[in-house]
Length: 285
Ligand code: PMP
Image (cartoon, rainbow, N blue to C red; front, side):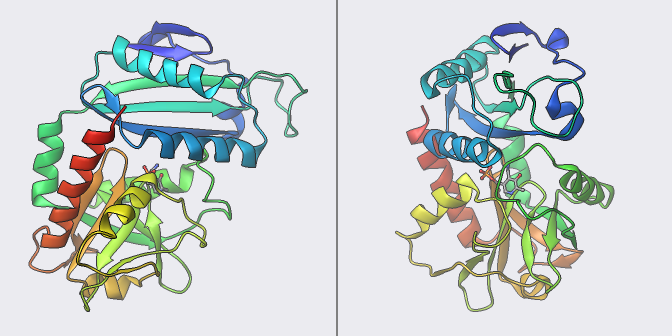
């Protein structure tokens, strides 16, 4: 395997950044993840546009054109011979002596890209059964709309899920409403048969998979209500699922040990997964 690090492709085991990288010391950076289908990236523009927004919000100016960046993503996928999997891009504010304020003007940001294969048969087997979800209080900061590498609360939430035999942790605000998953957006088909997912005016990440799925739902015979739902509503829901690059549309069949529906992936969830996968594959670049 190889990784791209600041202008060069290096063997994965030797692909390093400096100890004074601000990503390492302050989580002062952003990232994106694309799913790869048959060697091509899904939802390409959506992730690129969000990357630009995250960088602008943090006032990091990337020293590469979008075209050059695209080339690096494709080349990293190619050199790693990834047919199905993910490609990861991270940009930090660069390397400088540790000090909280931004480093001197002209300090180049660090840009790294890695790619790895994921066996599509394994992910399909997981999706076919559905997965367990737990819930925990959302303890994150006020700018969860920016895709920063500051993911410690998300890491702790995901670990709590794994320790309880679950796949994902849905985070919950003070009102008892689900914000989002530790690395996914949360959805239900509520008791009235409406699709529900939290609006992104609230403090959550505007998922690219979420946006792509919404466009597909517009053509379907199901109502979408972009409104937060409580943990109690989720436990009473007909169906539950979550979305993200890599997970696509993943059915949740239990929440905090409470079975959802009949404990199997629901029909709407299954339909949406197929619709999303078909479109993502078709439009990958
Ligand atoms: N919420 C959080 C907190 C995430 O980390 C992610 C995945 N990066 C998502 C939602 C889903 O976003 P996307 O569909 O763009 O992968």
